[in-house]
Length: 105
Picture 1: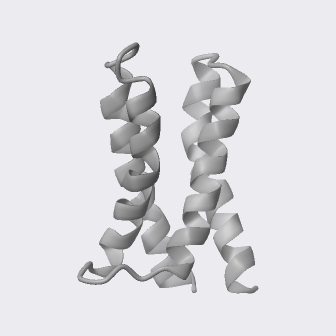
Picture 2 (picture 1 turned 135 degrees about the vertical axis):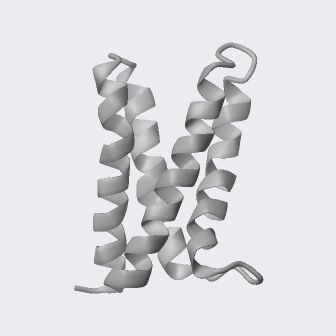
């Protein structure tokens, strides 16, 4: 399996982990699709990047936090309760993507 294919598989799994609770809460389809695509693309970026001065396990957390920050800022005024959950998901799923990259690549 190529690195690109593996990154897409890991990203799809991470996106599914994020979207399943969103579907259970009956959120809009666009929100679910946006979250899925964010983690799908984040996995590809994490697999092909190596941020300087960060250990391997922090690369994914940094990238997903950077990608989640615009989303948090978008709805920070309306739904402040959702911001910590989005940031926590970004850190957790970013870490899991980094672990997958480290041990599956």
